[in-house]
Image (tube, rainbow, N blue to C red; front, side, top):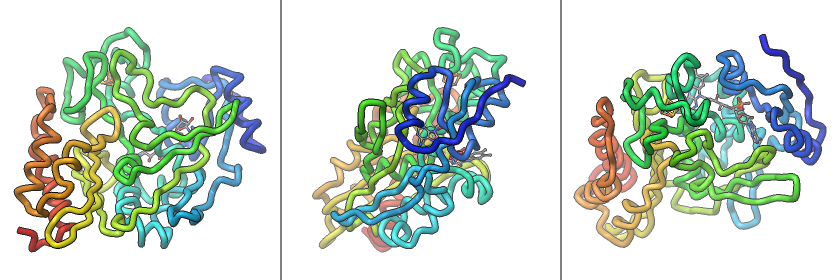
Length: 330
Ligand SMILES: Cc1cc2nc3c(=O)[nH]c(=O)nc-3n(C[C@H](O)[C@H](O)[C@H](O)COP(=O)(O)OP(=O)(O)OC[C@H]3O[C@@H](n4cnc5c(N)ncnc54)[C@H](O)[C@@H]3O)c2cc1C
Ligand code: SF4
């Protein structure tokens, strides 16, 4: 047992100042990921600053028609919110596809976004892992790679990002609001997480002490026609092998606009910009969806155990888009 201190934050500024001033302090949301890591020996904070008492727990309508989700909105409440279900079904479906009812009751929006990879070698402190200890090596490179990345990996890390919520937020082009010691900044959801490059230890672009306060969903009318699909090894309580978040706007048989992101394929939620570009303005047909999926996956580099992810991703992209275009789409 490694001793640590626990403090409940009274206000945003002092929470940020406390964590910023102590490199061994960490924010605590629902604790469903961080506390596991403390038990496993992956994280050893000397101070936990519990932010769940801060008044950042509401879903509010924005003047432009979008929604602001406070960081402390619990995953269950987010998925059940009537405006989320009506305007952004992909988001409600993504949240419900993750974890279990009990975990979703505790897990927060900010904590979910910042959960760490489920790479088994990362979670096993007896194996080398550059994400845990930079420079140590990567056990997965010569290990079992069924669950690992096919896009954007590096020789330093081939892990995938685990959050379903983050994939939906990437597709929706949501904006993450961040408080730091010298003010506030915003980060697009698609730019929050990073590819590993030579720094596998860094999951996101956030600096130590930066607090997520909210996530803004843009007004996106066609997001009402959206869905989340997730393939996994068992029906619940499992992370994605591949997931697809898609929103589609079709008029007169042509794609007026489209949003697409993939989960389970890279170190970050994968914004499928090549596929989006290939589809915009073109016919809403199965052939066009297949061609778009192929364009997105052309640069994929599967590992020995996960080549199946390419076909799976292609099929899931086409199936999700076809469902949104109408099952009778040509
Ligand atoms: C068995 C199991 C199965 C699961 N299955 C899935 C799944 O299928 N899909 C899925 O998406 N997830 C899954 N999860 C993960 C679960 O969704 C996360 O554990 C949860 O969302 C984390 O939220 P939390 O509030 O508990 O975060 P915490 O554990 O409290 O925090 C996580 C990280 O975020 C930081 N943090 C928390 N709040 C903030 C903030 N406001 N600003 C800055 N940093 C912050 C913490 O310091 C910590 O580093 C599963 C978890 C378990 C245990
Ligand atoms: S893939 Fe990444 S997280 Fe997994 S062992 Fe290698 S460096 Fe660690």
